[in-house]
Length: 284
Image (cartoon, rainbow, N blue to C red; front, top):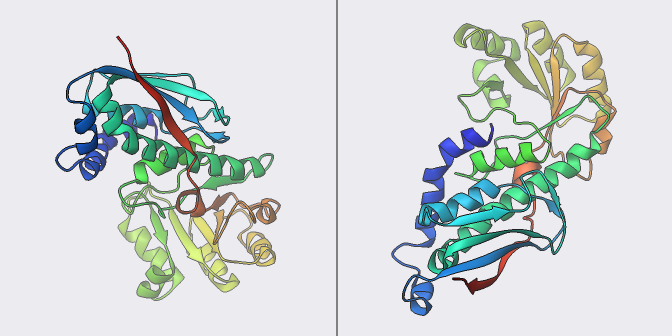
């Protein structure tokens, strides 16, 4: 997932967001602005964090009017401070007013995810463990939210159900056993696909290793059980731990030595970063 990929998949989603906010007209703006007037507005950060989503913010206004011009003084991934001027948008005042909320919704949400991800990723510095997101994303926001995770210093797990094989508890239940689920996945999937298995106890760990799983996800295990699981796996598969991982408890996992830590909280629990558009005024 990169900026180019996001761009190819984002326009129709942004248009849907604009259509949700403007079903027929922006009646408030049309009441006070009866005709086109060029204007300028400032983009100001109201709290410390990591900025993400500037291309999406810019694209909102371009889709409303391709003549709109945006000038940024920061780039995605930069640390920003309360009160900092991030950029300016220049164009038809009606466009600036009508696009404001949608543009800010994207920018605040994505920057919040990037900021929260950066906080957790910083706690993993010095270790070999990589921080992953999950599919616990807002519907129709996944492309934006997973991009924000990368901007914040995390890594993307599979993008969707077509992107990778992850045998979870219900898949294993449907197949009948860990071994049978892995066997069936090996028979069905292209050889280039890795097979990941979610396990909940040490017996499942042993079965997954013996079945030839490529990645073993240690789900909701205690740190002590995870250490024993890693000893059993002994490098025969990559390891991932998951289960209610947050900024407050990730430090207990750093010393265990797993290859990956996945956290749904990166996308489902990150607060927004407060950003606003201020000082709108006409210009010649």
